[in-house]
Length: 304
Ligand code: ATP
Ligand code: ZN
Ligand code: MG
Image 1 (tube, rainbow, N blue to C red):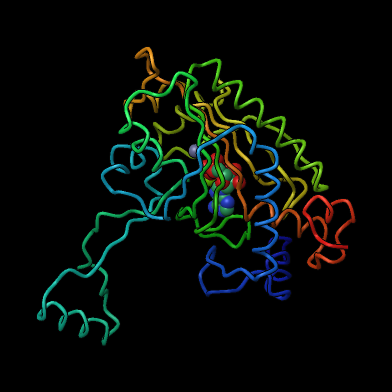
Image 2: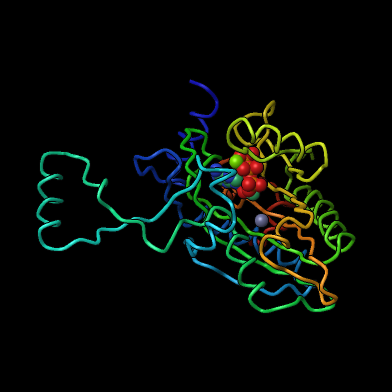
């Protein structure tokens, strides 16, 4: 039995994660959710004074915005679309007959106007673009969303539906790169406070196909993405629990995000993988929160 299976089994056995029969799709216990809620309060404590505008979008986004984002160019393998039955009585009869004989009843489902959100910041850009030019001080937003990625795995840290807390910054190059550096420093400090071992590394997104390899290399060469890695299932191959992305002016140009003087805005986002952070805590400190180190419990606000 490899280590991944054993952590997943321990999470199932302790009831922290609930098996649904699908890899990467889990229920969560009250205790697991409480760890996430407490960690989010720690995030608030670090970022709360910055004056970010909080917004919460559902885990589905406008399909037209998703199309504009270019996601299908870069990550077609990860996307999830919402399809529904849109037929009449006769189609319904066919559907039920098809299900009766275990046929593929899904092939006649029609695309709706909704796709599953791939990252918490995707619904933000068109929302801000619609407002007109950014204020003089730039834009800072606080987001959290369930996100979908079709990457089934028996690694409990690679889920298909998981939550991402994000801060997104829009402004000049200097402004947004300073924002990113601030959160890289804060991320290291926060993880130390909850007793987690971290390393920071340059990273790339899993761009699809042959052209994607070039985009990934370019992203690395230009230091556009960093990840904060923490051991979850393996100390030798730690898991990305935070990521720090500088988009240059690519999103600003794509969405029409402009500064007060009309220049195209630069953007950056920092993302916390909330399930991954909770899993890192359970992997490091054990399945029983009552037995976690006193200083970690104190940081997370547990009563003695
Ligand atoms: P990885 O390299 O592990 O696939 P990623 O580069 O795809 O991660 P991002 O796209 O930067 O991750 O997403 C932001 C954060 O969301 C990550 O730092 C991670 O903590 C979390 N995350 C990403 N994919 C998953 C997943 N499948 N399950 C749980 N958390 C995830
Ligand atoms: Zn983002
Ligand atoms: Mg990924």
